[in-house]
Length: 334
Image (cartoon, rainbow, N blue to C red; front, side):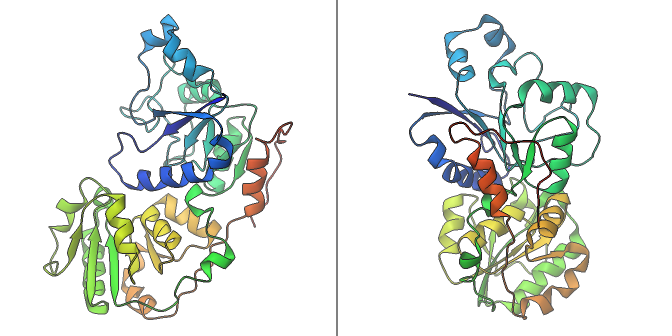
């Protein structure tokens, strides 16, 4: 039986958005992994100690010999792998068993210049045979500049949002809303406006804790007495999304997951991830510095028309069919 390896970005994460990403990645890879023995290792915490690799233990060899080694999305790539806690917690002394890893809807963090150590490490650990699936055009350019093949497929969380699927998402507002905030990117004035606007426009307001510090953050605001707090589990988020409800918030994957549950969603753009994905994939977003326009947007009809290039997604999957190797050519993202 073939062994395959999934590098899990949700283990050790402080953000439940990584649970969302990994659930979608596992679902999308089912056709490839269904007949294999699927192994998992973490990315946020180190998978091996250097001496385990140096000794060449039998257990390490099992992971090393996996037919495919997939990395499950998230904002994994960094410009500096010498940072104190990289999203992919590997180094030149323990990367060996992960050599040949393949990105699945992965994005890059801030910055555009990859330092020499990081270039060297990526060149050693990432696959040179298979094209990598990347989240946006910026990440595609970074990966190609490193010398790899890349296809802009968008995040795996988007791959179920076909035209027909999106047509079933309501265009008019509900009486209830679930929202999110991002404690690590706090802007008190604009976030207070968000809370006030939701209280004004919805009969029932829920707050889902996606990040570890989000609960402490929301407690610092006014007008939160009637807001219902939801625990930080994906099960609780799914349960509320099974009701008649809208999603509004600063959490990108919270919004995408709500759309996957056919909920009307407005994502408040606060960083390069939402901005980049919105530009390419036509997500319903509003910049946080334009938060005063949210009231009008809530009360308008919103059409969900996510624009995933499924030809690119199919092209990435086809390379795992027998005898298929993809060429490093420019991809159409229109």
